[in-house]
Image 1 (tube, rainbow, N blue to C red):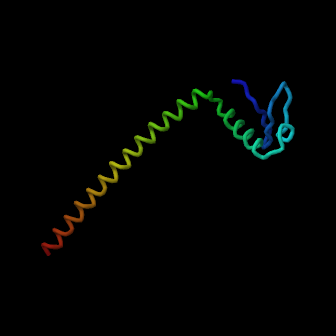
Image 2: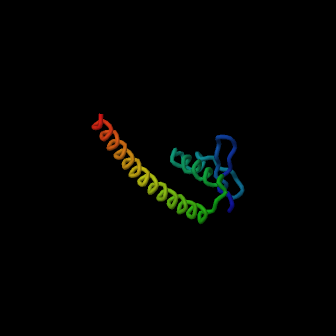
Image 3: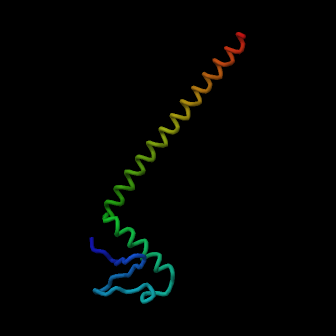
Amino acid sequence: MERLTKKSGEMVWLKRDGLCLEPCEIDSSAAVREVLVKLAAYEDTGLTPKEVLELASEVDIWKSGYQDLVKISKNGISQINEAIEKLCSISQARK
């Protein structure tokens, strides 16, 4: 995929017709600069839009699995705590 931006340190330019245009040459708003910086960061990943969507889907699957594990571990921990409390109360009652 061909880059639309050119970076040099903190500077980002829009490549158009072989020229590197500064953001102020396109539009003086800060929003254009922010868009160029985000586009350049995306281009730095080397991923295609399809690959980004596939990766996002994988992240959602992992996130869902992680949330399930957290729920299970919280339930497990509360059951363990209940058992410990029960044992402690039985132990204290015997004294």
